Length: 309
Image (cartoon, rainbow, N blue to C red):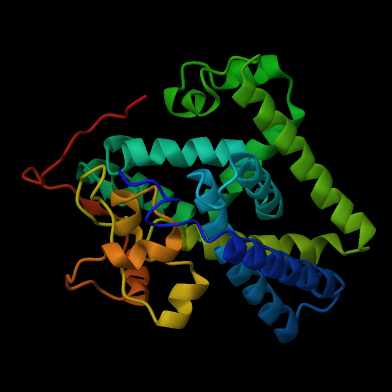
């Protein structure tokens, strides 16, 4: 695997400039949206822009999760933490969750869009649509509050014998460096949002509504790049067609197969790894997602089924 800073250099300056621009825009939208008392068309447009601007913010967080947002590893971490605070989460928590995703992609551990038999169809459909309408992000927010506010003993008890969750905090050892970092970052995240509301004198209802719009916009797009792809850990993703301007706005996040096949390559260079297949448009893939989960057929090829620790 090629190192990102050799043949495919990290766009340090671009990532820093984009981070400053989008974080500034987000705070401006919070300021004018959080002052609103009438939830009309203007507020709806503000919410839409707010949710959309957090998409490239997450794209840079995603780069930081792979240590390819900035060349300096420590600065890469700080950038990831700063952006994750605005996003509403602990950077270390979502980084570990994302790296687990790369190990368990399209296995039974991560099956969101597929189910095994008709008896579970109703439950799968409910969970599928709940995740996509916003609960993907809400679950991350809940984790932030849990790690920030609950005593360590209770957290350990809550996630004991739950491998898929305990793996995220390295066995839930309360003395582990990852656990401590998640806890500190979660506290800072909550303090930041409380501070913004107080300092800017924002109304809590529009503030929460703006983040709920973000929850829907982000959650509903989070799994588009994997839905109904091959049951392969590395190749189980899509490269979707997208308008060049939107592709730049998304930081090539639509080229997700290229990313999974080359996770150490920064977003700016992913287009060099896209093969000339008949890739469908991102919008068409997004609309297809809302048809709901599909039944797994007996002859469906599966690379492997179980999660990897």
